[in-house]
Length: 362
Length: 252
Ligand SMILES: Cc1ncc(C[n+]2csc(CCOP(=O)(O)OP(=O)(O)O)c2C)c(N)n1
Ligand code: SF4
Image: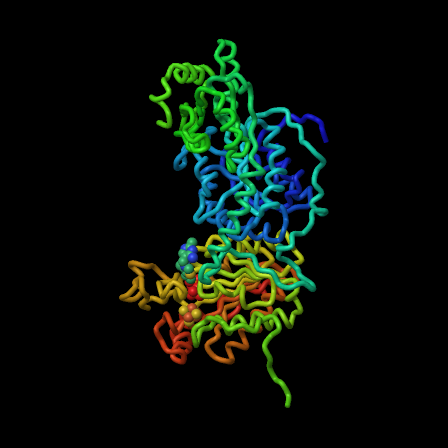
């Protein structure tokens, strides 16, 4: 279907997951993502799937653990405090190599924080979040359309490499209404192949076990290292980003999600004022698009990272370009959205700053 | 020569890790017999817990998944809802089910998930080395209540069958024991009924089995069976607490 629909980001996320073949959803209410379970509660049975309002986030993610183990495309969504609770189960899914899919519609934090859009959960998302050595495939949409179309990619990558995948978004994108265009034909869940590891009714085949532990000497290390090989492949093949006006840019803004929306406004403003500014938008946060960023950094004078957090992605930016050029940070934590004007102000400062003063410092 | 008993087909021929005198092995066998006799092994998925029975997934000849501590009922819910044709059971200890997993237990019962829970109550945390469980008896020592469980400090034991019998969604609840041969036979019957409930689509069924942990109760195997009969049974009376067909027996 290629019609344009006017949809809230959260509704697009839910509909996109169903069109991607998701047939199991378990969740627990938390603002600003409530539209997702609300939408799923009627749409999922309509699509022939299961919806459960769980008693807690802990229960929801463990329901997913069970459902995903049967090979069914499964999803949960939550917002920051709820995602913290889900980390136990996410780690177990990572340990069991299960391709679950979840969305974090971030709010301001830490603690109960507020319900505004924020980006304080970046580290938690890209570094693992739960216990143990693992990674999650993380996508960061910045429009309602992307909210609706990224679930399919998350399921595909998650299944191909057998890892949990997530969409990291925020309260503003979740609540924002925009035209949404779903790409590709809806996936027929009944026609998806049953994975060779899935548990369930087994007339005839050998029994299967899904789990995450191995107490035998050295065996767990082997399992973890085998997983690392897949992580390497993902890093090589699956990183995505978008570049805007980077060819002649002296200062390149680096921002994702709602931060990229604000940066886009700043980009337009800056260009109007004759400042040579570009935008580098990571679409996958893990794997971080390192190679693409290095190419951009080799042409620019400095990078300005715009984040709705104390500055978390800035670490990956610095690591990626290995301090080749100065990296500045424009940070608004606690659910405050930066304006285009204030970002342009930071662009001017970056243009004035001498390289030594600012290189690799916060 | 006539063979009167044999290893159930659904119990794999591997050496179990349980201590001598432990009740887990007995109940494993009973569960496997149920799967055989009901002819459901080929569509059964078991959820192994965290606790001494953490290796349950190595012992049953059916698909198995290893849960996180206490989350068995939620995992079983996810499996059952996505594959309703499967028979799903969760096997759990008292720390797992009545402490960290209490919310998952109560809510899966309240939703009347069509699953079967095998609940081993040995009044202690076995795997982690004998700490107090929610089911530890008043006055009973443990490594975290060395002077004996003191209600002023630790509160009272939780009677799970009694608690769950308040819930409409709980359809079959029975407490049994495995401390004598006669009780083992009764436990088998209860377990079979609990699985039959699921086969018939009747909703949440749980059997609480009073069991021995000689190692962590610090009692030799024979005396430990006695302990279950003499000390645990008065606190945890056996019987059917809920049977949707013979509504709410409500105790003994
Ligand atoms: C989240 C979490 N907390 C604690 C533990 C440690 N732990 C492992 S087994 C166990 C207690 C098990 O006791 P019980 O459920 O009574 O089973 P038993 O060993 O007696 O059969 C605990 C606390 C864990 N594995 N995970
Ligand atoms: S510690 Fe107790 S529960 Fe665990 S195997 Fe030994 S006897 Fe059984």
